[in-house]
Image (tube, rainbow, N blue to C red; front, side, top):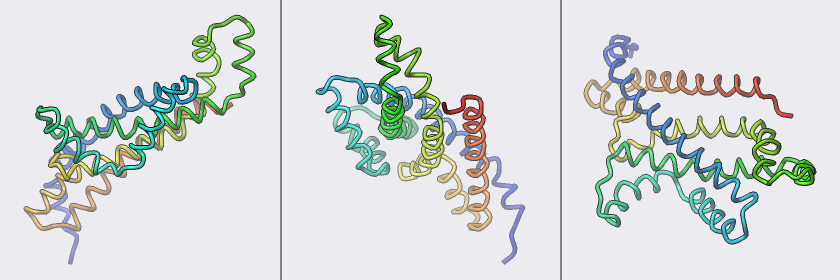
Length: 218
């Protein structure tokens, strides 16, 4: 069986539309997930015991359940519980945000706790309030250390958008599946889908490598 390049060329505009939606869902979901995850990570590192325990339960539950189950729950079960209709794209963004926030929380916690306590104690001894110590002393050092795992989480979340095909979101994988149902050119279309994912993920990886070079770990 010969490789039919014409099938790839014909499908490329539709695949790129799916890739655009994939990037959109991953970007919005990660922005929300990283924002929430950083807050949760700080609470895990420095929060009072009751709050720390609640955050720990949240992180353990999210990390202990498959993302596909979380997607199905948000799309099918949550509307029944809340009596609202949730669109597929919205459900995907929420799922990526919730899932990534739990992993980012642990990344942030580990990065903050890896900084020597002596720096925090020195800042407090100088009369600085704790939030200034966190923002101007501990935070910048911890941020440098969380760059590699944070970049890895971004790559993982971008790939995880492929699971949204189970709720009919027309991201890249679902789009490729639909095209194959029409032209039966599985080898060509899945090869094209794989290459598009490779290009997107390589771009994300190069971006985080650039950030890592600009902000070396101290």
